[in-house]
Image 1 (cartoon, rainbow, N blue to C red):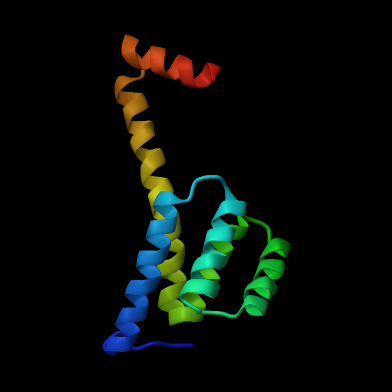
Image 2: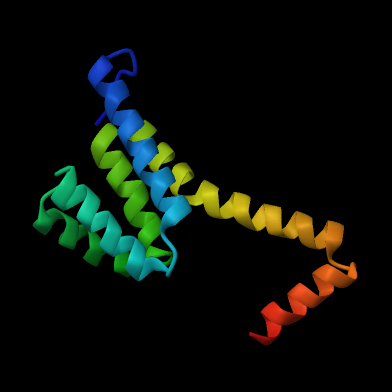
Length: 128
């Protein structure tokens, strides 16, 4: 499934894929089970990118592959919607928010981790 990005409909689909998976990446907390439930609601019920049976078949196949099932679903759903560009876009947009959040926390830890305020906050988080 190839796409021409000059086509207005293809551009719209690319924007849809990017917007959906960026939003899911930033707002879906709770692990793969939550991600999968939200993806199902979005791509099957709301946007109708795939049928219920196609989604369940994909979920079954993704469970057999080593790695995070929700990320595999995001990648495949991006591919189904827009081809190879969607595969890359879906995966990057779904994983990028978590990477940026962890990168920011790591930077803050290296920069402020030894200060008394940060030490107290980290101690509270670790004890929680």
